[in-house]
Image (cartoon, rainbow, N blue to C red; front, side, top):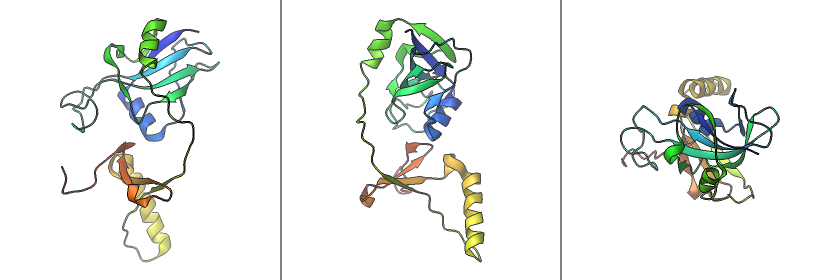
Length: 185
């Protein structure tokens, strides 16, 4: 069982953060069934969006390790640990998009830092609320879906909270917590 670092583009990482498909396809990597990989982003050439985000100093968004994965028989990578909500700094693991082998010690140095999440799942309520002026409920629903499609996850906050704890509600934009208080900067 070989160990790999698989570097994905910033765009693929952003899509994974938003939709979390559970598996990543990286064509032409040469991974065999059972191979393990560190999933890493390429560094961004664009300025960081949020200077308060982990590692988000002004300038480039640094590369991060966003998961551990195992390859299936088709070479598709499936998460063994998903770190999308708490990625680790990639350090020297970043590089060009693609896959490269690493020795077991390098793999274990990163994998050993990963805190395994609790396996239990809980129920979360997720809401997108938009005030819409319309002449009928059907027209309001059509306008709602038009706004959702037009604004999308980059502009439209989704609100999430554990079932039964509405006071814990948080806003998320692009899969990351986002402050929606206009008086706080």
